[in-house]
Image (cartoon, rainbow, N blue to C red):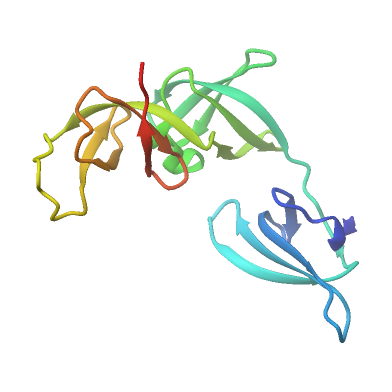
Length: 187
């Protein structure tokens, strides 16, 4: 058991038998009354996000989560196979754990996998990845009806909104959290 004062972003708490990832935290010391810690927690299994407040110094149980670097190898049915970069062991991670990260993973991409008692909990992707556009309509000069963007399919099969001047075969940088176009990559 530890104190609520030890909560930080990325801390995994064990509350009521479930694991919660700390997305945000704020220590508050009001002028009147006792201090407290305001948090935004995400349930690791269901994905539900809740706001929870702890009194300062309250006892909280932290879960020991191991984060390791893994390399994505291939998809196998509903599982994704990753290789641990320390000892080269391979693990299969269910698609429910991988989630939307599958839209931005290419073979040999590196990710961080958080494990609790040998069970994969979630993936941490790099903030951005470079992907090649495999299909997009040609942009028409002067067409500004859709704010100067068009839909493009990248090599992983994901759809990304790109500016009209971006063509098929162009490598682009994509934000893995929001699926936003960040820019072209010149070679």
